[in-house]
Figure 1 (cartoon, rainbow, N blue to C red):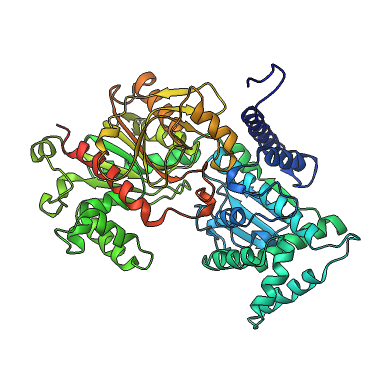
Figure 2: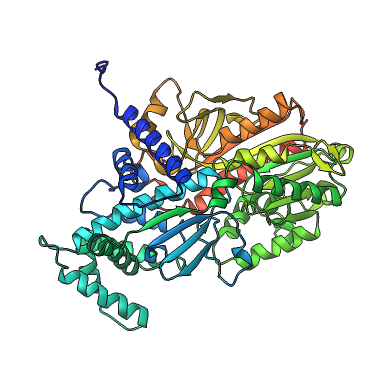
Length: 563
């Protein structure tokens, strides 16, 4: 049944909620500070609860605390943030040279500094997407904190016995004293509004990550600060430094990062060689070239070897491969600019084709004539993709001269949410559509679905949506992307930003070849339309190895043997 002209679909309401969130975040960023439970903070909470993103599960339940969502955000926030009443977002302002020890979350490359018992400083050097991402997570955290506070009080506002027992459990935990875990789980389940079984499972999941505090600790401090604000007017506050507000959007970190790379290429005598840029993780290309020889595994297929290298306890094996690579044509450019993006440079003229695995094709005539250089840059984050790629494709400026970079191809391999498949499947985009705008970027993709068929994985080809944030998507919006005339196959955060930078460099500025070869392919890290398959339900693990290496090998073979 069609909607009346005055009616709005849930997808339209959700898109409006996303826009309100972003407008509110921009306004608060410009203003310089806000209180999460003040008028501005409440507006963000209202928009987020109306949106009800899949990754935050039961955020709208007034009593049940969303446990998977909490673990997801605390893996991306600095350890101990639940104890801090004041959170300040800063740029790189010299704290790396101070006595403060940096705290780096396990799933986000951010330096954070615990200034004192009540205050945390968090470095934002990856652009607006990074700021929006953390503000969204913090808003969710405060929503769950209010649930814990309400669950800890009776109808007269007095603290329940379960809360008093939790205080004792946290004290014992901090002192290293024993306590009865079954009894502790029982008290905690009341405060979380969850069953005993759900609470036990959540405690075990939190305990697996050494960079995340226990759920007892987190529950206590979230509830305590919420109570302090309601009872004693000890307001929580989020603020933004003036330096951060001045620097965002001006490519300060990206410009320095790109200049470091070009300077290194110049010092190695490689700046004029044909350059092939790959945005990917920092292990797949290195392993594809060197793992079989470094580990004396000649004859073993690359996928099996990669699975072995991906096992958490095999750090020594990974170090062996890296050391071998650095002796045989690979160079590393560490990030000193603050982007969080390390770069690898592969000089193909220094490589011995005899050491390569059977999966790689090597055209000796082509390599000898063109001497291609491969640059692998670690994943960017959202809008940071535009900043870094835009700066990387500009000419190298030295001694008042501009030296163009000889970029022959750009390949983007990433993780994305799939809309009509499962974890581990492959997506090959034909265009990137930027969420919330009319911006769309069709592209001539030199990777095709046919390159990956017959490998035991499903492959989908079509447009992909570059979203404002993975934590801001709900099923209504995703069903719209899938079922509307867009016919989107997946969601990711960087594609449109990369393509905007590439088109500007090749079509407008003419700083690189107008016919630069483009390759985009993604593997599915989650299917947000299937319950239990969202990012909050856990990482892809070894299931990501096969698609990662299928895409990597296809990219490398097109570079090494383009005929």
